[in-house]
Image 1: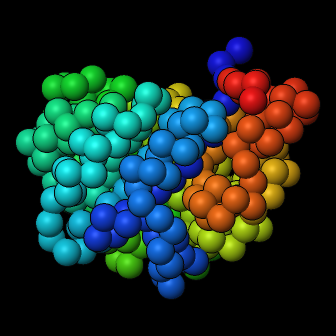
Image 2 (image 1 turned 180 degrees about the vertical axis):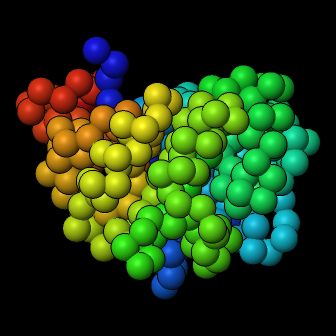
Length: 254
């Protein structure tokens, strides 16, 4: 049985890790290189770094910290933010990232998913999808969760798989930062519609939320930020708890 993955997410703004609620009220949480190293040492399976204002600021991801992360850590990591062309993706992969994440650019130019997958392989392409309930429908949002699109979330998930995405990072804006649990119903539906791995994001507050998402949905991984940044939950503690409840995870004895 494939092991479930625990993935800390590090939202980066101006070279610093930040965390907010519903994508707002951002607070400084530390240095991305040092935090990434700490999580790798604690037993994180992968890391996701998102340069969250790159698209809004109309700039590329800053490669300096990407290179430093690649030199410092030994686990796979994904980088997203400001990637709008194949050359943008290539620059990040060549700086040491294992995968790239695209969100707004994928909606604006769906062919970009296919281009990157053909160049580097589907396993390198993570499509990040920010979703929010609007009039009882799950809608896709872009530009850091500020712009609603015409896409229904479930339909967009299926489309990105067909275009060559190797993984979906699905974040519920409604659940983001409020620590009341993942969007179980939506994650259940999406994981049934696609065959590629789905990473659950948005809402983790206690260990039980991770257990619930793995027990009730077929997601491959669970991603969180503030519970790890503020040491509400430690990764070794979480993984031991999941193992005790028969969830297969890679556990390192500390």
